[in-house]
Length: 311
Ligand SMILES: [Zn+2]
Ligand SMILES: [Zn+2]
Image 1 (cartoon, rainbow, N blue to C red):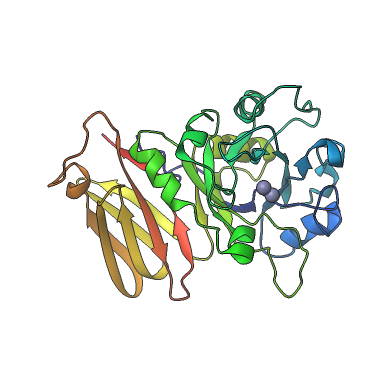
Image 2: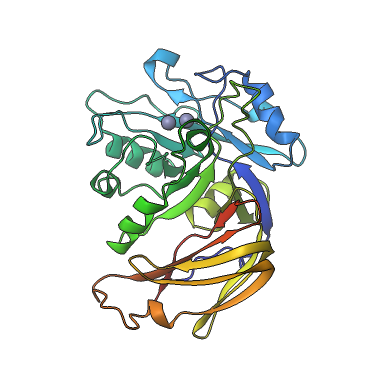
């Protein structure tokens, strides 16, 4: 099913879904954090302070920071035991109620994610590469709508920002999950800015918290660290991509299935999908077949679509 945002009504709104303030381990006050996004070309931000006892299990209330043309999603980074590697889960939720209850004794990460989902939030598996999540971990978290294919702070600090590998393994095993990019900003080191690194472009009719959250949950967004995707559409047996100028257009489908176009200042590409409909490859017919598109610009900056499930 095609859940792409491009033919949806409305326009794109740019937002960061993962950032921290002095309400947890960030280094700017909530209002300063939100103001940075408002003053730097964003339409919305979710302040997602760590929701743990150490910081009082508080959901940061950013409603007073909404101004004409700029809004906030109420969010948090949720934690509960325990991943296969023995860590607390990191689960970003945007669109939470302000009275979201702290984790109950014995509540697991997957149960906490399911409760956030049931309370209307857009639920993200945060930075899988950074803390060694496994495919089996994410497969226990059925409530997650998306995972961070790119986490800016993990890339900046540890070169561990890219989680495209686990995304493709999950989808090759039939899991339907979307791909977002975030900052995970803490504003700690001015000489190494961890903000403005990764964001989502959400298609909605209004820049309104409820409309944005509904669009995110429906998959009506793409992720970027630079390039703009102007249109991606299935046209017969092809996928047609229009973007800001890029050097590479990569259509990937898991396993060894790729179609790529390379050039200087590419702004349009038409790519046949035959290879993804099994083609010469032996693909387990029980699995869904998907493609996803990544574009890369002259500075190495990428944009990512959500998976498109074929037939
Ligand atoms: Zn985290
Ligand atoms: Zn974080």
